Amino acid sequence: MLLKLRQKLGLTRLFIPPYSNYLNVFSHPRSGTHFLEAFIARNFYQDKDLELKNVPYGHWKNRLINREGFKYGKLFGSHLFPNNSLKRINYPVVYIYRDGRAVAYSLYNTDNFIIPGKKEISFSEFLRSKIDWDGSPAYKAKPTMTIAEHWYRHVEGWNVLANVNKNILVVRYEDLKSDPYSIYQKIHERFFSDQNKKEVENIDLVSKPVGLLPNKAKVDSWKDVYSVEDEAFFISQIPDKAHKYLFNG
Image 1 (cartoon, rainbow, N blue to C red):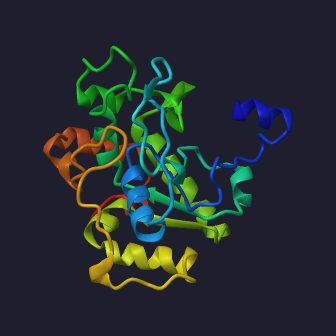
Image 2: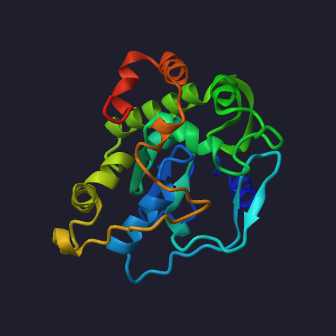
């Protein structure tokens, strides 16, 4: 309904999320999106109703509906790749990125986020195959990229975008886990400076997994899965300059 209305009004060239009056979280899928949304909601929007029901998810060949929805769904922006129209974003955005090695494993380990019927393939095979979606598993695309290449293009593109648009703040998932107060301070300074700043002992740390199909949310759990050859392959798919986006190099 919303898309048809936007098409009728000629508004599809510039993406505007449904709730642009709130701080919007953009990300590559499985990068801590819902974790950051919960963190923002509990520390900056304590008295707001941010819940969405009937949230769609999964691969484009088998889209499903999470009828329980998500308590902080109105803070979700998109998993879109950056594009020229997004350079003109005039609402507040936080882009969260996560070590691509963890992202790849989380995608593989999440029901209905890879091709239905292909879960029988090994993780090593998944790493080396071309994915058939764009931005998120919801959008069909010609298979041209491995998940490592897809992740790199997404993260690099949004970092470039943030350098030319001060409405966009980039944060790292691993920093949110290890030093949440520093992330709180960055968000407060950029978007909520009119609010009283909380002391470190008063921020909500979001200690339990949240969101759609949450996993254990450990920073380095991917290390237990990757073989030496798997990690070498992942690294071979991204340029040297992308190593800065990997946790601890």
